[in-house]
Amino acid sequence: MTRLIAKVARKESGQVLVLAALSLVVLIGFTGLTVDVGMAQYTRSKMQNAADAAALAGASELPTAGTAIITATDYAASNGAPDWTITATTPYEGDPNKIEVVCAGESESFFTKVLGIEIGNVGARAVAERAGMQGGPFDYTVFSGDPNYTLTFNGSNTTVRGSAHSNDDFTINGSSQEITGSAEAVSKFTMNGSNQTIVGTCQAEQITTNGSNIHIGAQLESAAAWIDMPDFSELIQAEAESAGQAYLGNRPFNGSNHSVDSPIHVDGNLTVNGSGFSGKGIVLVSGNITFNGSNLSSSGSSVCFYSKNGNITINGSHVELDGLVYAPNGTITMNGSHQTVNGRVIGNRVVFNGSTYDIASGAGDLDCLPRSGVKLIE
Image 1 (cartoon, rainbow, N blue to C red):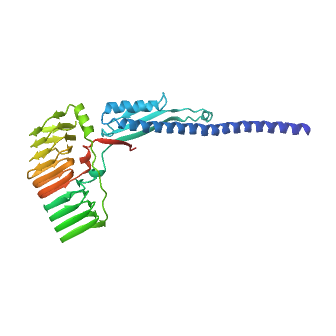
Image 2: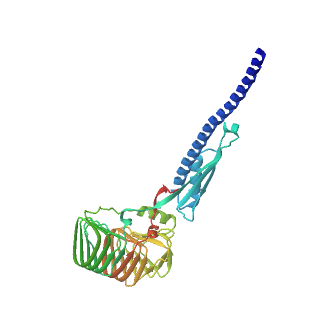
Image 3: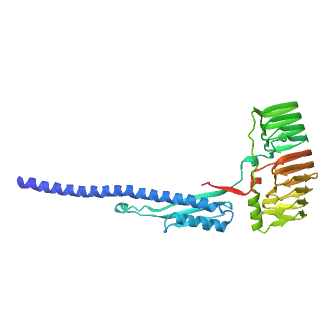
């Protein structure tokens, strides 16, 4: 009996040792899995931070693709590991103002190999965009910045497809005029006439309407915010000089197509007679800009005509101008009738002399403005 009990004890002891050994393997495996998965998450997090930073650094160099790619790649490498694969791509999805950065590599498996598990490859990606200049006066289709000047619409058949803002008073006189967005004034808003419509909100410290068939979506008797007008002329001048597109003295543009994919700077006055413009960019003029009977810009283009210190005048009837006119220190005057601006009219003062104006802003008409900041979008 004693020998039998000893034999059974030895057998059970051997089974315990086997079970203990198997349990130890499983314990090591699960402990290792926790460690290795944590290491993989750490590596992936490090890759994501590097990709984000690299995409932002590269976007700051856009739309110069070569420089952006080199900057992004170098930035990711300096913030990553030497064995990572780093790929920077721009244009991204056809947009020259976007860049994608992808970081890829392997995460080491120290313990999970016991279970036959390999963590393998990990990776991260980021997409950044050099964003256009937005906000402020560029949120409006018509904008008047002088705090001592009344923005006035006189006449008939004027349509503003968007919103309008005045840093002082805002007056609409006449008939059959419509603002499809909002109308804002820091001080007083007055509407006189018939068949007048503001689809959005009319906001001013004081609102007065006189006439018939006047429709306003909503009224808010509170002063609209005073909005400053930015000066980015030095940036545009430097880019124009770098591109060999800087001209000294007064200059006419007559009867031909002019590309503004590179900025143009005229240190003087500019007269535009029957010319076309194409591309996306800015014509910066230190003095006055005068348009005489011109059909400007081709479909799909985005052109900003920027008078740094002068005035902008649009003369003629049945004139169509595709672009943004910007005079932060001067007056924009529209003389004539049946004038169409496919863009925005933004000036220190804006004057309408005539009737039948159609000013229509759109998402793409700000593409001409310089890129002022970078942001992650994916």
